[in-house]
Image 1 (cartoon, helix red, strand yellow):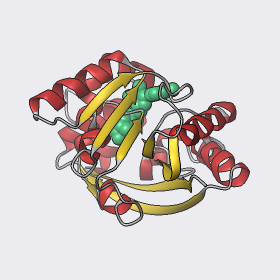
Image 2 (cartoon, protein in one colour):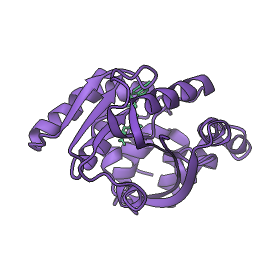
Image 3 (cartoon, protein in one colour):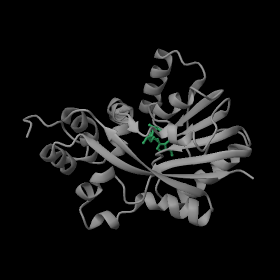
Image 4 (cartoon, protein in one colour):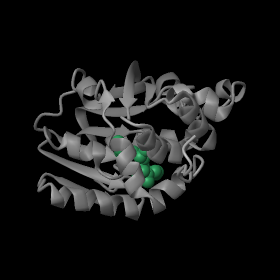
Length: 243
Ligand SMILES: C[S@@+](CC[C@H](N)C(=O)[O-])C[C@H]1O[C@@H](n2cnc3c(N)ncnc32)[C@H](O)[C@@H]1O
């Protein structure tokens, strides 16, 4: 066991977003194989589009989309996350990405404005919030445009360490991710598909100080004991074309 394990915030994502945006950014920057947008681009056209990225965080999803979009706006509720996104955008000299404060539940844009509304791992979990997010996203999407939500698949919280983090028994009980599916697919008839991706952190230090810091002591102990530096995930993409 390494002597100086980094501290952990034990799954307190609110603290992560408010106090440690740089750690979130390092976690988000670990490449996924396949890359999220390589998968999304097989299904959706970002080229020349006006796009809203809901829950844009430190800009990882927004700045990737900016490569193809005419313009992309990140909507982000947490000031610290938005500030880091803006700094990175300016540092990279990206001119077609901007960020606005606001909530997924009350999107501050007029009706029929975007070609595509995207959310990548938006952390809302109550059915009424997801219904509201879906209604707001569809409202600001143009006719013929798409709403696309990328989330962790049900029972995959923390990826392949779900049972370690939550405990063998709780892993099938704790189904925060499944709420998206019940609202978007079962109630609102969004289409969906799943895909698997692997994140290789490259070293034990790197995985402990990002993934381990976020997902907690049990994950850190397991990774250290097994000298594991990669995490497998299953993601679920829900999408709907606005009629
Ligand atoms: C897991 S991060 C995803 C960031 C980014 N999409 C990415 O791919 O790296 C989720 C972000 O959603 C933000 N968020 C949480 N609730 C929100 C809401 N109701 N409206 C807008 N953003 C929200 C959080 O502050 C956080 O920055």
